[in-house]
Length: 293
Image 1 (cartoon, helix red, strand yellow):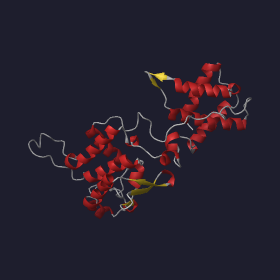
Image 2 (spheres, one colour):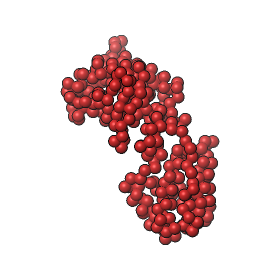
Image 3 (tube, rainbow, N blue to C red):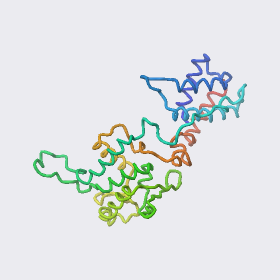
């Protein structure tokens, strides 16, 4: 649970009730707070999305339930009947890749084979084709982009995939994701071909050194590690391709995800509704400060 979300509510309670005493927190105040969050506008746009509001209200539900168990509210749990807004399983519209942006990113990924990894020293190689960096892996990077775009899997999942996780006949990718949950993703013929091109034409030169089952390998020129890519590398690949495509303000998370990934076992990824040890400690401290009021 995040203390900042509690702080937003406490500030609202002070503005509305003139105090933040526990006894003033009623179901009506909770409902009024929820409505105020959805009505707040900055520069002509809503300040908070439905997903953000749901996160705030979910944290308040946990906090109110805890307080009510320790020291009951006069009118009962003020968050018990508050319902979260119904939202789709996909990304928010403003964050998701548009169909045009999707085409541009995939086209840019295809261009990596020709232009990716070229030396940036134009003066030194004026009039001649600039050489590619020795450790640059164009086919690998292209396959990573296709995987992100077509499956929407997390960046960490992309680095966790092994060669054996690919089923070329069924056109699926299986991988262990956050929380140890296994997911299977469908991928198009085009995306599968991008992976096949990498495996057959480029991966072998790095597999000789690393002897790793990882699908996407670090270049053999990298001196340390176990061959498996870091999430940072996936970010770098995305940023390179997005820059070529002229797509700004979008991240690998902008690719569509299926409902199971976002709202199934890994719900915290979208809604932040699970509670970690650090969040529990913050919650306990907040309760201690609030229970005597």
